[in-house]
Image (cartoon, rainbow, N blue to C red; front, top):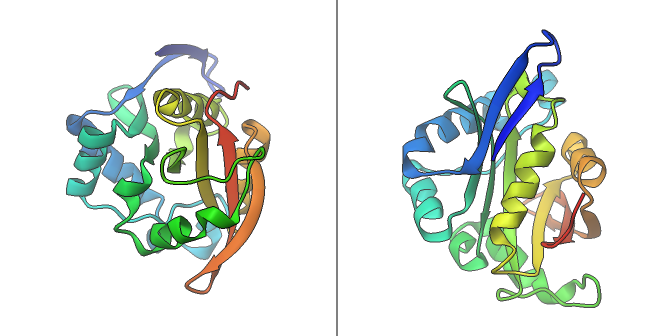
Length: 200
Protein backbone atom coordinates (compact mmCIF):
# COMPACT_ATOMS: atom_id res chain seq x y z
CA UNK A 1 0.00 0.00 0.00
CA UNK A 2 1.41 3.39 -1.01
CA UNK A 3 0.25 6.41 0.97
CA UNK A 4 0.63 10.04 -0.01
CA UNK A 5 0.17 12.73 2.62
CA UNK A 6 0.93 16.34 3.26
CA UNK A 7 3.76 16.46 5.77
CA UNK A 8 2.53 18.05 9.00
CA UNK A 9 5.36 20.56 9.42
CA UNK A 10 6.35 21.44 5.86
CA UNK A 11 3.09 21.03 3.96
CA UNK A 12 4.96 19.16 1.22
CA UNK A 13 3.75 15.84 -0.12
CA UNK A 14 5.38 12.78 1.41
CA UNK A 15 5.15 9.20 0.24
CA UNK A 16 5.11 6.25 2.59
CA UNK A 17 4.91 2.58 1.68
CA UNK A 18 3.16 0.14 4.02
CA UNK A 19 3.80 -3.55 3.35
CA UNK A 20 4.86 -6.86 4.85
CA UNK A 21 8.54 -6.99 5.71
CA UNK A 22 11.11 -9.24 4.04
CA UNK A 23 14.34 -10.44 5.63
CA UNK A 24 16.09 -7.53 3.89
CA UNK A 25 14.14 -5.18 6.19
CA UNK A 26 15.32 -6.76 9.46
CA UNK A 27 18.18 -4.32 9.98
CA UNK A 28 15.79 -1.36 9.76
CA UNK A 29 13.28 -2.98 12.10
CA UNK A 30 16.01 -3.73 14.64
CA UNK A 31 17.27 -0.14 14.52
CA UNK A 32 13.78 1.24 15.20
CA UNK A 33 13.15 -1.31 17.97
CA UNK A 34 16.41 -0.48 19.73
CA UNK A 35 15.83 3.27 19.45
CA UNK A 36 12.50 2.90 21.26
CA UNK A 37 13.24 0.08 23.69
CA UNK A 38 12.68 0.83 27.38
CA UNK A 39 16.22 -0.29 28.19
CA UNK A 40 17.62 2.47 25.98
CA UNK A 41 15.40 5.37 27.08
CA UNK A 42 15.48 7.76 30.00
CA UNK A 43 12.48 7.95 32.33
CA UNK A 44 11.52 11.22 30.65
CA UNK A 45 11.75 9.69 27.17
CA UNK A 46 9.58 6.75 28.26
CA UNK A 47 6.69 9.17 28.78
CA UNK A 48 6.43 9.33 24.98
CA UNK A 49 5.96 5.56 24.75
CA UNK A 50 8.29 2.58 24.57
CA UNK A 51 8.54 -1.11 23.67
CA UNK A 52 9.80 -3.93 25.90
CA UNK A 53 9.95 -7.00 23.63
CA UNK A 54 13.48 -8.23 22.90
CA UNK A 55 14.18 -10.13 19.69
CA UNK A 56 17.29 -11.32 17.91
CA UNK A 57 17.75 -10.85 14.18
CA UNK A 58 17.24 -14.59 13.78
CA UNK A 59 13.91 -14.45 15.63
CA UNK A 60 12.76 -11.57 13.44
CA UNK A 61 13.74 -13.45 10.30
CA UNK A 62 11.77 -16.46 11.55
CA UNK A 63 8.73 -14.25 12.27
CA UNK A 64 8.90 -12.96 8.69
CA UNK A 65 9.55 -16.29 6.98
CA UNK A 66 7.28 -18.52 9.09
CA UNK A 67 4.44 -16.14 9.95
CA UNK A 68 4.63 -13.26 7.45
CA UNK A 69 4.34 -11.41 10.73
CA UNK A 70 5.98 -7.99 10.45
CA UNK A 71 4.18 -5.08 8.81
CA UNK A 72 6.32 -2.01 8.13
CA UNK A 73 6.05 1.57 6.95
CA UNK A 74 8.95 2.78 4.81
CA UNK A 75 9.71 6.41 4.06
CA UNK A 76 12.69 7.55 2.01
CA UNK A 77 14.09 4.03 2.17
CA UNK A 78 13.98 3.87 5.98
CA UNK A 79 11.72 1.76 8.21
CA UNK A 80 9.73 4.32 10.24
CA UNK A 81 7.13 2.02 11.79
CA UNK A 82 6.49 -1.65 12.35
CA UNK A 83 3.90 -3.96 13.88
CA UNK A 84 4.59 -7.59 14.74
CA UNK A 85 2.10 -10.46 14.82
CA UNK A 86 2.34 -14.20 15.05
CA UNK A 87 0.81 -17.42 16.25
CA UNK A 88 0.96 -18.38 19.90
CA UNK A 89 3.13 -21.31 18.83
CA UNK A 90 5.70 -18.85 17.49
CA UNK A 91 5.71 -16.67 20.61
CA UNK A 92 5.70 -19.59 23.06
CA UNK A 93 9.44 -19.46 23.78
CA UNK A 94 9.08 -16.08 25.55
CA UNK A 95 8.13 -16.40 29.27
CA UNK A 96 5.55 -13.59 29.15
CA UNK A 97 3.74 -15.22 26.25
CA UNK A 98 3.89 -18.58 28.00
CA UNK A 99 1.98 -16.91 30.83
CA UNK A 100 -0.55 -15.44 28.40
CA UNK A 101 -1.11 -18.84 26.78
CA UNK A 102 -1.73 -20.28 30.23
CA UNK A 103 -4.29 -17.53 30.94
CA UNK A 104 -6.16 -17.69 27.61
CA UNK A 105 -9.00 -19.92 28.96
CA UNK A 106 -9.70 -17.41 31.74
CA UNK A 107 -10.77 -14.63 29.39
CA UNK A 108 -13.72 -14.20 27.06
CA UNK A 109 -14.24 -11.79 24.18
CA UNK A 110 -17.53 -11.30 22.33
CA UNK A 111 -18.77 -14.55 23.86
CA UNK A 112 -15.74 -16.55 22.69
CA UNK A 113 -12.94 -17.94 24.84
CA UNK A 114 -9.63 -17.34 23.01
CA UNK A 115 -7.29 -20.24 22.39
CA UNK A 116 -4.17 -20.99 20.36
CA UNK A 117 -6.23 -21.74 17.25
CA UNK A 118 -8.78 -18.90 17.13
CA UNK A 119 -6.44 -16.07 18.21
CA UNK A 120 -2.93 -14.77 17.74
CA UNK A 121 -0.60 -12.36 19.54
CA UNK A 122 0.05 -8.90 18.12
CA UNK A 123 2.78 -6.50 19.11
CA UNK A 124 4.87 -4.70 19.67
CA UNK A 125 4.07 -1.78 17.38
CA UNK A 126 6.55 1.06 17.10
CA UNK A 127 6.44 4.40 15.28
CA UNK A 128 9.47 6.62 14.75
CA UNK A 129 9.23 10.03 16.37
CA UNK A 130 9.57 11.73 12.98
CA UNK A 131 6.21 10.39 11.76
CA UNK A 132 4.14 10.30 14.94
CA UNK A 133 0.86 12.12 14.64
CA UNK A 134 0.63 11.48 10.87
CA UNK A 135 -1.80 8.56 11.03
CA UNK A 136 0.86 5.93 10.34
CA UNK A 137 0.07 4.12 13.62
CA UNK A 138 -3.51 3.51 12.43
CA UNK A 139 -2.43 2.45 8.94
CA UNK A 140 0.27 0.01 10.06
CA UNK A 141 -2.04 -1.45 12.73
CA UNK A 142 -4.85 -2.02 10.23
CA UNK A 143 -2.55 -3.50 7.59
CA UNK A 144 -1.14 -5.89 10.20
CA UNK A 145 -4.68 -6.85 11.20
CA UNK A 146 -5.64 -7.50 7.56
CA UNK A 147 -2.55 -9.67 7.08
CA UNK A 148 -3.83 -12.11 9.75
CA UNK A 149 -7.55 -11.91 8.99
CA UNK A 150 -7.72 -15.08 6.89
CA UNK A 151 -5.99 -17.13 9.61
CA UNK A 152 -7.65 -15.94 12.83
CA UNK A 153 -10.93 -14.28 13.88
CA UNK A 154 -9.44 -12.68 16.99
CA UNK A 155 -6.33 -10.70 17.88
CA UNK A 156 -4.94 -10.56 21.41
CA UNK A 157 -2.26 -8.36 22.94
CA UNK A 158 -1.03 -6.91 26.21
CA UNK A 159 -0.12 -3.37 27.27
CA UNK A 160 2.06 -2.61 30.26
CA UNK A 161 0.11 -0.37 32.63
CA UNK A 162 3.12 1.96 32.93
CA UNK A 163 2.66 2.76 29.21
CA UNK A 164 -0.60 4.76 29.10
CA UNK A 165 0.24 6.28 25.70
CA UNK A 166 0.06 2.83 24.13
CA UNK A 167 -3.26 2.16 25.85
CA UNK A 168 -4.64 5.48 24.56
CA UNK A 169 -3.46 4.77 21.01
CA UNK A 170 -4.99 1.29 20.96
CA UNK A 171 -8.35 2.41 22.35
CA UNK A 172 -8.72 5.78 20.58
CA UNK A 173 -6.81 5.65 17.30
CA UNK A 174 -8.00 2.07 16.77
CA UNK A 175 -10.81 0.35 18.63
CA UNK A 176 -9.23 -2.37 20.71
CA UNK A 177 -11.12 -3.49 23.80
CA UNK A 178 -9.74 -4.05 27.27
CA UNK A 179 -10.97 -7.47 28.40
CA UNK A 180 -9.09 -7.85 31.65
CA UNK A 181 -5.79 -7.48 33.46
CA UNK A 182 -3.01 -9.80 34.56
CA UNK A 183 0.30 -9.63 36.39
CA UNK A 184 3.63 -11.13 35.43
CA UNK A 185 7.13 -10.74 36.83
CA UNK A 186 6.14 -7.76 38.96
CA UNK A 187 4.46 -5.89 36.11
CA UNK A 188 0.76 -5.15 35.62
CA UNK A 189 -0.78 -5.54 32.16
CA UNK A 190 -4.00 -4.75 30.35
CA UNK A 191 -5.33 -7.69 28.31
CA UNK A 192 -6.57 -6.32 24.96
CA UNK A 193 -8.50 -7.86 22.06
CA UNK A 194 -10.28 -7.04 18.81
CA UNK A 195 -11.84 -8.95 15.89
CA UNK A 196 -9.63 -9.20 12.82
CA UNK A 197 -12.48 -8.02 10.59
CA UNK A 198 -12.64 -4.73 12.49
CA UNK A 199 -12.83 -1.56 10.40
CA UNK A 200 -11.95 1.87 11.76
